[in-house]
Amino acid sequence: MKKENKKIGFFTRIKIAVTKLEDYGMFLEEKTSVAVKYFFLIVLILTMIIAIVQTFHIMKMVKKGYAYIQNEIPDFSYEKDRLQFSQNVNAYDQEFDFYMIADTTENITQEKIKQYKENIKSNGIIFLKDKAIYQTGAQEVEYPYQDFANQYGVQTFDKNGLIEQIENIGLVGIAVTLCFIFVISFYMVQVISVFMDWLIITIFAYISARICRIYMNFKQAFHISIYALTLSLILSMAYQIANYLTGFYTEYFRLVYLLISYVYVVAAILMMKSDLLKQQAEVGRIVDVQKKNQEQTKDSDETQEEKKENKKPEPKDKNKQKNPEENPMDGEPDGSEI
Image 1 (cartoon, rainbow, N blue to C red):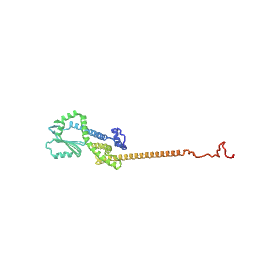
Image 2: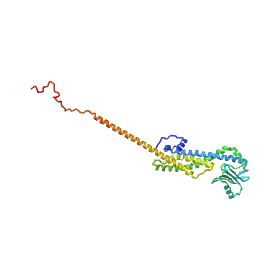
Image 3: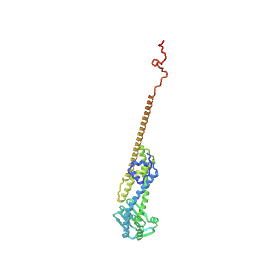
Image 4: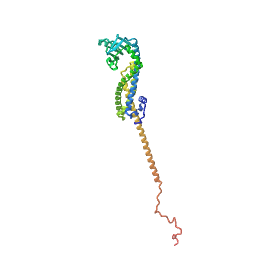
């Protein structure tokens, strides 16, 4: 099953991984570093695609939000880790299904905060005196202003200062920054998640090879498993984008994700076994032909030896005497004269 290793391009590997299961055998004898490099690269590219789509979607919200800050939002100011709005805000954007709530009352009650959270059906942000609460679906994240000030060194700003800062950075700069943040945060999560799936598929591939009576060590199973995961990773990217843009969700996606990888592993192993059986049959046929040739050569040699033996001249009898009557000697008496 060992083949000559050739340099294969990244996108060619993707094509082979998805459409040419019969060529998985070429990955068995490659260095593990090649499979690991493929793993990091495909996760990075898919993560970047997801980050770009999310950035594009968020930038539409940013542009709309920037227009809202310029024209509609009430005056506000930030100082000493405290945010203060001139009046409370309860705004909703139907296009993005997004709520913005601002209540910087000093002694706001927990019941009031709970009521604000219940008003947010899907996505929204609540600005309080000392922190912001971002909510999306069932997830909720709190951002204390003090952490924001320590991280970015911002001590004071107001509405006019924020508008000026946005204009200085530019919407393109904001988009690049958001995309970079998304790539870094998503990539680390994806690497850990996909690597765990890779190990699970590797164990499955190793056991499947044993069941199919094909010798495959753990390293070789490790190699082909990342390629068997390729289609699942691409579908996962498409699913995450659809979920983010449209809210599409199915609880069975994880099952389908792993099932596709298992099918690819089993199909690749069965094709390898089929190739191995063909090779063994071909070797057996060659051996049979060689045996027949040897037997024919041997029979031919024996026939030639027999022919040589039959063609040998008969030995002369040295003791054989000539008949004197048949061959009388000229001039010698024969006894008739007496």
